[in-house]
Length: 171
Image 1 (spheres, rainbow, N blue to C red):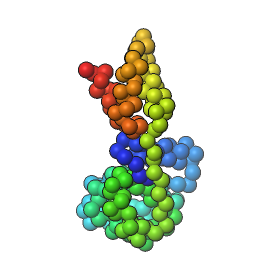
Image 2: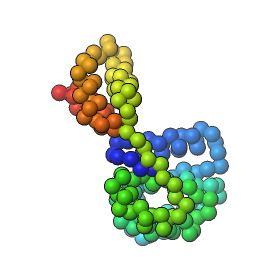
Image 3: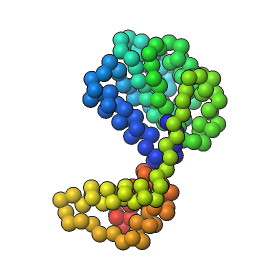
Image 4: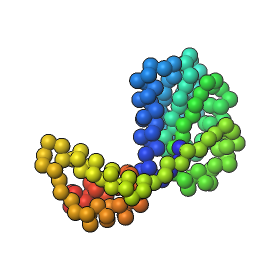
């Protein structure tokens, strides 16, 4: 998965995990962050735990760009673990610089780019946030100018639109 910060990469992985759990499939889902496997002994333990699982595995490595040995990590997963789907989250800049190296380590990789929202989707998101924060209260009123400023400044990035809305309301 690749997309700018705030585009929803982690949310997509959580949705995948939820689908796996709700459908009681024969898949296991593991989310790991680079800090959890940064030492070789931690990584070896992680690999051993995956090898002991009987079912097919889905592994999500969040903030993968923080892992300096990501090529090594992906190569070891590819070589040692059968029936595995590895999902990694990348910012486009990091993927641009590491992409070829990653593709050599994990050649069957497909990339999914999470596009920023268009203007209408951003507006819908803002109104959903307004509904959420207004729950149980009278509906919060915001001007069209306020909505337009958030749409313009967030550039369609959902996480940024929410953060801008939140910061504006606090002020």
